[in-house]
Length: 212
Image 1 (cartoon, one colour):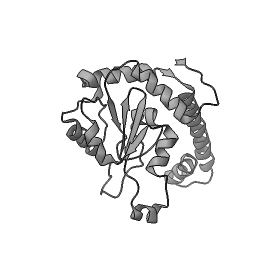
Image 2: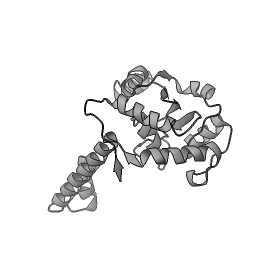
Image 3: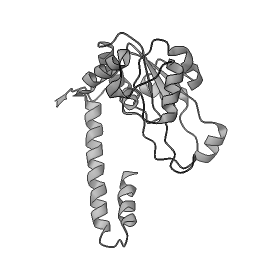
Image 4: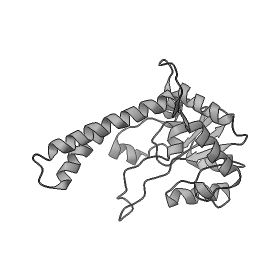
């Protein structure tokens, strides 16, 4: 596996910009990537833990639900709705859209509803959850195939992203090392829990305590 080395002094926004620049050298059309949302289990409010689409995470660096980014060359625009007063009441304060945009080096930031005016001629990668996929198809005014069956500019985008991600940069390597470290700690906690646990759920809880 190839790697790329960057200076430790570089910020997250610097490294994300480098990723966008590498992608921009391979394509000549705008790109919209959605983060997705958590699918429900047995009723709408009972959702699975959220993890953003891998490609959204790679270029935005944010595990942010119900968001999208527009890539035009090395220019990044974030689309996301800020929490409502009710959300703040239940979950506490969170960064504003402008603050998040500054953290990732976005050139602009808008509410999610504004995305409709920026989707013309854009390529994308279909996400897995059906609700977000319907939004993608509605805004892009076309049906989307799974990535392996994509055609046209969506296929070109998939090939270009694969080429960019084939060569890990320092940011990706740091995430891999962190994941390996947490995985090891979680398994060690699970092994230790077997000495006193009486159910599998207790072992799982010990592991998830490390992971979460």
